Length: 400
Ligand code: FES
Ligand SMILES: [Fe+2]
Image 1 (cartoon, rainbow, N blue to C red):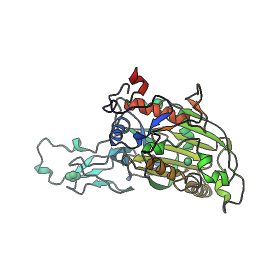
Image 2: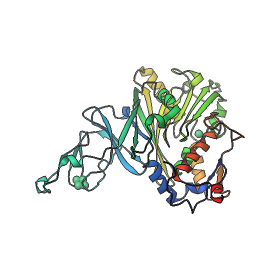
Image 3: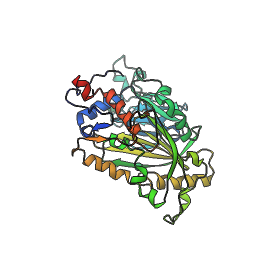
Image 4: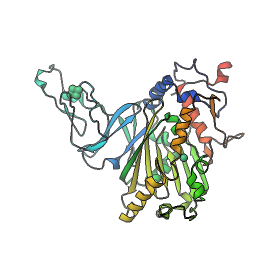
């Protein structure tokens, strides 16, 4: 991962200051291609599904890793595997729907059939194939996967990737907490959204903005309490905050969505970003995993998956469901306005000034590894990881 080659390093200047980011990175196709190669297909772990999304044999889900179509299948042997979603004959995308259940995956082009373990079972006209043909060689291409309390992380470069443990670092314990401590989650449903914004504009959502951008915080007089933010050198973060009870202002017809039932208000809000883009959140009783994927340089698709816990009563499931998309989702009470900001950053990316700035918490000698939960310190750590991984030298380094 050190000193990577970067064909763009001489045509692109990175500002000298640690808290400045050139807005060109939200716009350039060539940079986007480099990101796919170095980050999405490089030695980096990406969460793509939780096993509770595919609880039964034959359950499957499709997604994207960068721009690669992928397929998650619960195999007949009980194992959940992640494959490249392409027929191994001529490369036809094998599954086109989002999710379902089947034990045979048939390619429509020449009717090859794969089983739920990815093995090739049927090839029409096989008797006319070359003598050395063997079905064994043509199983679906499996992607290296690690399971962290049910959350499946994949990498396309396992030889050079760090262990998942070291990749997660100090975010691991908080990620585990979001997933109920034991990972025994139950899928309640999804909301999907496409933002017309570069994936990094989405990813850069900071801890400074929530009470300022989101009107619900003001309308409910809902102030956050103490908290902390651990930041790993790869920009992965865990942000844990105390949540005080929101004031009963009469603003909401049904104030039960603000209730704490199975949560210690001292740790009422967890926001954990255990990888490049994925965010795991436990806010009050709501548990969600956001699976974002870049869909081109100016577009980001996000699948918000909402969960209950396997031990929940029916009443608790209802409460979590009610809280889920109503509170924190693409159109949730405390997150609704984010979409507008992502779009507006993208639309104005060519305007002056040419850099964007991170300022809150950036004071002399700030502690980058342990920020406050309401500043922009963690963003600077991610951008430093990004700059180094892609291989952009800082301007001052070029001048020396
Ligand atoms: S491309 Fe799938 S069977 Fe030929
Ligand atoms: Fe927000």
